[in-house]
Length: 212
Image 1: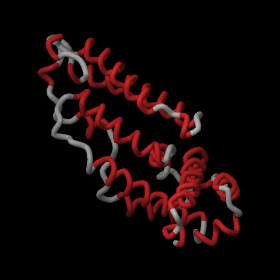
Image 2 (image 1 turned 90 degrees about the vertical axis):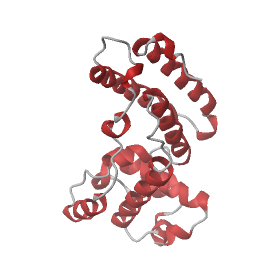
Image 3 (image 1 turned 30 degrees about the vertical axis):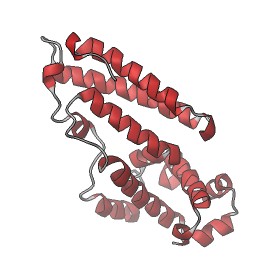
Image 4 (image 1 turned 45 degrees about the horizontal axis):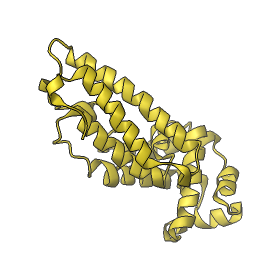
Protein backbone atom coordinates (compact mmCIF):
# COMPACT_ATOMS: atom_id res chain seq x y z
CA UNK A 1 0.00 0.00 0.00
CA UNK A 2 1.10 3.59 -0.65
CA UNK A 3 0.86 4.36 3.06
CA UNK A 4 4.28 2.75 3.46
CA UNK A 5 5.86 5.47 1.31
CA UNK A 6 4.41 8.43 3.24
CA UNK A 7 6.61 10.67 5.34
CA UNK A 8 6.57 9.76 9.03
CA UNK A 9 4.23 12.47 10.35
CA UNK A 10 1.50 11.84 7.77
CA UNK A 11 1.79 8.06 8.07
CA UNK A 12 1.73 8.12 11.87
CA UNK A 13 -1.32 10.40 11.87
CA UNK A 14 -3.22 7.81 9.83
CA UNK A 15 -1.88 4.87 11.84
CA UNK A 16 -2.66 6.41 15.21
CA UNK A 17 -6.17 7.43 14.17
CA UNK A 18 -6.76 3.90 12.87
CA UNK A 19 -5.25 2.24 15.96
CA UNK A 20 -7.59 4.28 18.16
CA UNK A 21 -10.73 3.70 16.07
CA UNK A 22 -10.19 -0.06 15.73
CA UNK A 23 -9.16 -0.39 19.40
CA UNK A 24 -12.30 1.39 20.60
CA UNK A 25 -14.82 -0.12 18.19
CA UNK A 26 -13.29 -3.25 16.70
CA UNK A 27 -12.98 -3.95 12.98
CA UNK A 28 -16.68 -4.35 12.27
CA UNK A 29 -17.88 -1.09 13.83
CA UNK A 30 -14.85 1.08 13.04
CA UNK A 31 -15.48 3.99 10.66
CA UNK A 32 -13.08 5.00 7.90
CA UNK A 33 -14.78 8.41 7.96
CA UNK A 34 -13.64 8.87 11.56
CA UNK A 35 -10.13 7.62 10.76
CA UNK A 36 -9.82 10.09 7.87
CA UNK A 37 -11.16 12.98 9.95
CA UNK A 38 -8.85 12.22 12.89
CA UNK A 39 -5.93 11.90 10.46
CA UNK A 40 -6.63 15.37 9.08
CA UNK A 41 -7.16 14.18 5.50
CA UNK A 42 -10.11 13.54 3.22
CA UNK A 43 -11.56 10.06 2.95
CA UNK A 44 -10.76 10.05 -0.77
CA UNK A 45 -7.10 10.85 -0.11
CA UNK A 46 -6.92 8.23 2.61
CA UNK A 47 -8.16 5.58 0.20
CA UNK A 48 -5.45 6.72 -2.19
CA UNK A 49 -2.98 5.50 0.42
CA UNK A 50 -4.86 2.36 1.47
CA UNK A 51 -6.90 -0.06 -0.61
CA UNK A 52 -9.75 -0.80 1.80
CA UNK A 53 -10.74 -0.93 5.45
CA UNK A 54 -9.77 -4.59 5.50
CA UNK A 55 -6.32 -3.91 4.05
CA UNK A 56 -5.76 -1.08 6.52
CA UNK A 57 -6.73 -3.35 9.42
CA UNK A 58 -4.40 -6.14 8.28
CA UNK A 59 -1.61 -3.63 7.62
CA UNK A 60 -2.05 -2.33 11.17
CA UNK A 61 -1.96 -5.86 12.55
CA UNK A 62 1.30 -6.63 10.74
CA UNK A 63 2.78 -3.27 11.70
CA UNK A 64 1.71 -3.70 15.32
CA UNK A 65 3.14 -7.19 15.73
CA UNK A 66 6.35 -6.18 13.95
CA UNK A 67 6.81 -3.12 16.16
CA UNK A 68 6.14 -5.07 19.36
CA UNK A 69 8.56 -7.76 18.24
CA UNK A 70 11.38 -5.37 17.23
CA UNK A 71 10.95 -2.67 19.85
CA UNK A 72 9.80 -4.79 22.77
CA UNK A 73 10.50 -8.53 22.72
CA UNK A 74 13.89 -8.35 21.01
CA UNK A 75 15.01 -5.62 23.42
CA UNK A 76 13.74 -7.31 26.60
CA UNK A 77 16.42 -8.97 28.69
CA UNK A 78 14.65 -12.04 30.01
CA UNK A 79 17.92 -13.10 31.65
CA UNK A 80 17.15 -10.47 34.29
CA UNK A 81 15.65 -12.57 37.08
CA UNK A 82 14.59 -9.84 39.51
CA UNK A 83 10.84 -9.59 38.93
CA UNK A 84 10.70 -5.82 39.55
CA UNK A 85 13.74 -5.02 37.40
CA UNK A 86 12.18 -7.08 34.63
CA UNK A 87 8.86 -5.30 34.98
CA UNK A 88 10.60 -1.91 35.03
CA UNK A 89 12.43 -2.78 31.83
CA UNK A 90 9.13 -3.85 30.28
CA UNK A 91 7.44 -0.57 31.24
CA UNK A 92 10.24 1.57 29.80
CA UNK A 93 10.13 -0.26 26.48
CA UNK A 94 6.35 -0.03 26.35
CA UNK A 95 6.49 3.70 27.11
CA UNK A 96 8.82 4.18 24.15
CA UNK A 97 6.26 2.51 21.91
CA UNK A 98 3.35 4.41 23.46
CA UNK A 99 5.02 7.73 22.73
CA UNK A 100 4.84 6.84 19.02
CA UNK A 101 1.51 4.99 19.01
CA UNK A 102 -0.64 5.53 22.13
CA UNK A 103 -3.24 2.90 21.13
CA UNK A 104 -0.95 0.16 19.84
CA UNK A 105 -1.33 -2.21 22.79
CA UNK A 106 -5.09 -1.77 22.96
CA UNK A 107 -5.29 -2.53 19.25
CA UNK A 108 -3.17 -5.62 19.85
CA UNK A 109 -5.67 -6.84 22.46
CA UNK A 110 -8.80 -6.49 20.32
CA UNK A 111 -7.43 -7.12 16.83
CA UNK A 112 -8.42 -10.80 16.79
CA UNK A 113 -12.09 -10.16 17.63
CA UNK A 114 -13.95 -9.64 14.36
CA UNK A 115 -17.13 -11.03 12.82
CA UNK A 116 -15.46 -11.48 9.44
CA UNK A 117 -14.48 -15.11 8.81
CA UNK A 118 -12.16 -13.95 6.04
CA UNK A 119 -10.24 -11.61 8.32
CA UNK A 120 -10.24 -14.09 11.21
CA UNK A 121 -8.69 -16.68 8.93
CA UNK A 122 -6.00 -14.24 7.81
CA UNK A 123 -5.30 -13.22 11.42
CA UNK A 124 -5.04 -16.86 12.45
CA UNK A 125 -2.35 -17.40 9.83
CA UNK A 126 -0.50 -14.29 10.93
CA UNK A 127 -0.69 -15.31 14.60
CA UNK A 128 1.18 -18.56 14.05
CA UNK A 129 4.53 -18.40 15.81
CA UNK A 130 3.89 -14.98 17.35
CA UNK A 131 5.06 -14.38 20.92
CA UNK A 132 2.17 -13.44 23.23
CA UNK A 133 2.63 -10.55 25.64
CA UNK A 134 1.49 -12.43 28.72
CA UNK A 135 1.93 -13.36 32.36
CA UNK A 136 3.87 -16.54 31.60
CA UNK A 137 6.43 -14.64 29.54
CA UNK A 138 7.03 -11.88 32.06
CA UNK A 139 6.99 -13.97 35.26
CA UNK A 140 8.85 -17.04 34.04
CA UNK A 141 12.19 -18.03 35.65
CA UNK A 142 12.40 -15.24 38.21
CA UNK A 143 14.63 -15.26 41.31
CA UNK A 144 12.31 -16.48 44.06
CA UNK A 145 15.04 -16.32 46.73
CA UNK A 146 14.41 -12.56 47.12
CA UNK A 147 10.88 -13.07 48.41
CA UNK A 148 10.15 -12.96 52.13
CA UNK A 149 10.18 -16.31 53.85
CA UNK A 150 6.77 -17.87 54.30
CA UNK A 151 5.16 -16.14 51.32
CA UNK A 152 3.35 -18.15 48.69
CA UNK A 153 5.45 -16.99 45.73
CA UNK A 154 2.91 -17.93 43.06
CA UNK A 155 0.16 -16.02 44.84
CA UNK A 156 2.56 -13.12 45.40
CA UNK A 157 3.33 -13.00 41.68
CA UNK A 158 -0.40 -12.92 40.95
CA UNK A 159 -0.88 -9.98 43.34
CA UNK A 160 2.06 -8.16 41.73
CA UNK A 161 0.48 -8.80 38.33
CA UNK A 162 -2.87 -7.33 39.45
CA UNK A 163 -1.10 -4.28 40.89
CA UNK A 164 0.78 -3.78 37.63
CA UNK A 165 -2.40 -4.05 35.58
CA UNK A 166 -3.87 -1.24 37.67
CA UNK A 167 -0.78 0.91 37.27
CA UNK A 168 -0.65 0.23 33.53
CA UNK A 169 -4.30 1.21 33.12
CA UNK A 170 -3.61 4.45 34.98
CA UNK A 171 -0.68 5.25 32.67
CA UNK A 172 -2.73 4.47 29.57
CA UNK A 173 -5.62 6.60 30.75
CA UNK A 174 -3.26 9.53 31.34
CA UNK A 175 -1.74 9.06 27.88
CA UNK A 176 -5.11 8.89 26.13
CA UNK A 177 -6.48 11.92 27.99
CA UNK A 178 -3.45 14.13 27.39
CA UNK A 179 -1.78 15.74 24.45
CA UNK A 180 1.40 13.89 23.59
CA UNK A 181 3.64 16.88 24.27
CA UNK A 182 2.04 17.46 27.67
CA UNK A 183 3.04 14.08 29.10
CA UNK A 184 5.93 14.08 31.55
CA UNK A 185 7.56 10.71 30.96
CA UNK A 186 10.28 11.41 33.54
CA UNK A 187 7.52 11.83 36.11
CA UNK A 188 5.89 8.57 34.99
CA UNK A 189 9.22 6.73 35.46
CA UNK A 190 9.70 8.32 38.89
CA UNK A 191 6.19 7.21 39.89
CA UNK A 192 6.95 3.77 38.51
CA UNK A 193 10.10 3.45 40.62
CA UNK A 194 8.22 4.59 43.72
CA UNK A 195 5.49 2.05 42.99
CA UNK A 196 8.02 -0.77 42.65
CA UNK A 197 9.85 0.27 45.81
CA UNK A 198 6.64 -0.03 47.82
CA UNK A 199 5.95 -3.46 46.35
CA UNK A 200 9.49 -4.57 47.15
CA UNK A 201 8.97 -3.57 50.79
CA UNK A 202 5.95 -5.86 50.88
CA UNK A 203 7.28 -8.90 49.06
CA UNK A 204 11.10 -8.87 49.31
CA UNK A 205 13.31 -9.58 52.30
CA UNK A 206 14.67 -6.22 53.63
CA UNK A 207 18.27 -6.80 52.55
CA UNK A 208 17.25 -6.60 48.90
CA UNK A 209 17.00 -2.78 49.08
CA UNK A 210 15.06 -0.51 46.77
CA UNK A 211 15.09 0.40 43.09
CA UNK A 212 18.14 2.29 41.93
